[in-house]
Length: 202
Image (cartoon, rainbow, N blue to C red; front, side, top):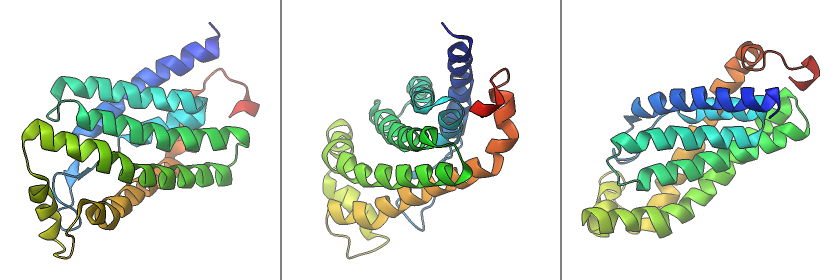
C-alpha cells in the first residue's frame, strides 16, 4: 500500500473522530426549523479530507463518524444513515470537482455544487425514507411531524411543503457554513495533513 494511501486512511480516521465529536455538539434553530432538526459542523473535517486526499477519503470520514455515532444513537440508525448519505454526496461531489483542477475557485465551486446536490437529494430521502421510517419506529403520526412545522408556518400542511420550505434551505445553509469554514482554515492546516507529499499535489 502506498505511503500516501496509508496517510490518507489514517488522517480520515482522525477526521472521522473529530466529525463524531462535532456531531455531538449539534444545536437546534427552533425559530427557523423544528427543534428535532439540528445544526452541526461535522461535515467540515470530511470536506477537508476530500480536498486534501480525494473524494473517497471524505466519504470515509463520513462513514467513520456515523459508525461511531451509532453507539449513542437515538434514531435506531436512521439519522446516521441519512447523515452519511447527505455528507457523502456533499463532500464526494466537492472533492471530485476539486481534484479535477485544484484551485481556491474550484474548491468553492465544488463545495457549492455539492451543497446544492446534497440539499436537493435530501428532499427525496427525507420524503421517501427518513420521515416514514421515524413514523414506523416511533409510532409518531405524520400529522404530528407536520404540526411541528405548522407551529412555525401555519400554511405548511404537507410533508413535501415542509421539506421544501424548511429543510431544503436549512441544508443549503448548513453546506455553505461548512464550506466557508473549510475555505477559512484549509490552507493553514493542509500542510500538516499532507506532510511528505510533493508540493504540486497540494
